Image (cartoon, rainbow, N blue to C red; front, side, top):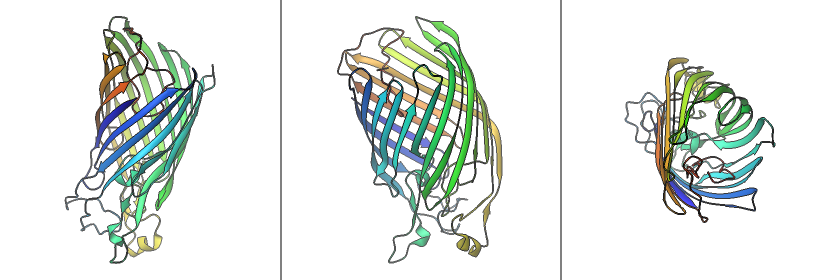
Length: 372
């Protein structure tokens, strides 16, 4: 059993693509015999995009550029149930109840025993902005008798295959997949992506830990550019082409048997190109009445950084506390995340400096079959 508190912040113009997301999830997990783990997760979420300043260069909904939208926040409670076995995992849940747009989520992961591939199928929300995650009310359509149109709440329906070979010391991987993205009055979109890399153990000490180095290359393509906030746009980063090349380093360390930590960092280069896009992709008549405005093409090339840290300490038998942080500038914005967790295990855990248990429980995604 445990609880996790997280504050996630992304840069951008307040009232539009800036977003602060606070969540405080609680979960309970247990095994059904030696080979199946079940997990229940309840996650309250609060979103705050801030107040537009009136000097912004972004337009929202059908409001004219000279109009300043009022503050729109969102709050709700999400839930998820997970079932994890050695070669199979499944989950089902929903985006927070209370958001303007609500969706069901889920996923299936298949990894045959002794095989070198994994198949993943998932349905998950796009968390880039309040528009893409929770949806917004179009103030330009509000009348004395109508509260206004709602749009947003984008869901990515994904399929991915990964082929990999190696062990904890060294290996390589390659994966590819696609997404079909939909939302409430948001133009449908398609994405294809690929990822490949290798890793090897650069240094190992039973007393301190292990340093793993690697290389990674990633690319993706979206059919449409829907990163804007006019009515019919999705509010999520969707370039026509995106390339990233990076050198990641990971250190898994410990101090005695009670404190375990992980530091993951990478430096590289990223480049992306965004296509021009209509302001109102689903409303051609309204688009024409506004003199057919178009968002311009955009190209960007620059450095990329990513730093993730997490640590866990066994404060007493059965009890772990920990904290984590993540800072990166992947995509077209900077993202910062900090948080902490508390975990209680009903069974006493054996202490071992090198192999743990570490107490570094995942804060998102599928929970592992075996206690980490």
